[in-house]
Amino acid sequence: MLGNLLKEINPLQKRRLYKCCTLPIALYGFLLWYYNKTSMNYHLSVLRKVQWRAALWILGTFHTSPTSGIKAISGLISIHFHLKKLYRRFLLRGSSLPSNHIISSIISFDGLHNYNFHSISIDHLTPKQRLCLKSTLIDMNNRYNEVFHLFHSSMMNLN
Image 1 (cartoon, rainbow, N blue to C red):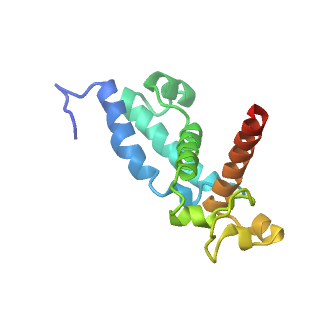
Image 2 (cartoon, rainbow, N blue to C red; image 1 turned 90 degrees about the vertical axis):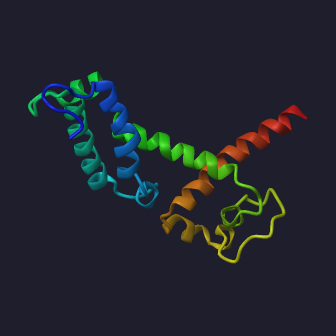
């Protein structure tokens, strides 16, 4: 639809269109299924097919072309690595939330601060419940405490 036989958009414009328009729509809400202890095979296979079709469209190649070569030439990174990048950005944003944010009151600080925790805080869960619970907030909590303990111990060494 964006071109015809005489004039078509170039591959760089197609790649930019895919990355700016299609990927955000396809990955909207990925945090609902992309977290630790969950099966991601179905979702990743669907997203790989979408990316493969986009790479074919970007380069204008045949369906029988090798997949990894097409993705490399079109300049698309693997969808799994793209999801990891987005997930790490989400975790980084979560650790920089203000202390009065509702998510900050739910995640645990392992007793390093004297915060008033929410009634549904992760601190109120038993260790067995924490292991059984599958959630993005649990992953954020675990990542936050890993990073914070490293930061806290390095600050103690400086003093």
